[in-house]
Picture 1 (tube, one colour):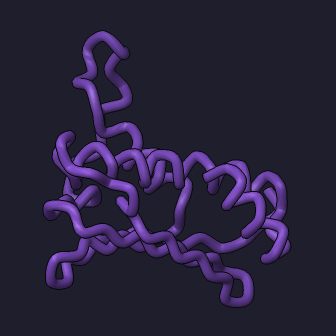
Picture 2 (cartoon, rainbow, N blue to C red):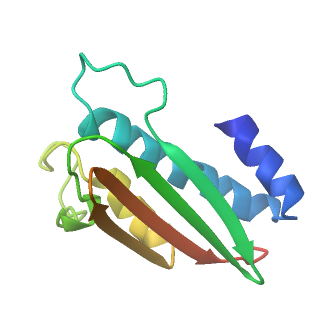
Length: 124
């Protein structure tokens, strides 16, 4: 994925800092799909289709999978005021995604999960 994002970043002239935060977002989003949309016994060579496009000063990312329905936006944000020992496991990934990206949405169309994210492209 790092190589794919680097190639996209070069082709779309994305700033380095922007690309670094995008890398974190993509790692979290794709990991969620792999861990939650599919049973461990399923073969997932093509677990997720990734589409990235730039429209002027905005980057759009569409992640599609054919796993079981899973809406990462439905999970409540974790209470980050709690210590790591007190906080339940899970939920930080989508929390980070929501904090880094400007918009996130989920839809289920037929047998597909579609997770869409967008962010205004900035230098910092």
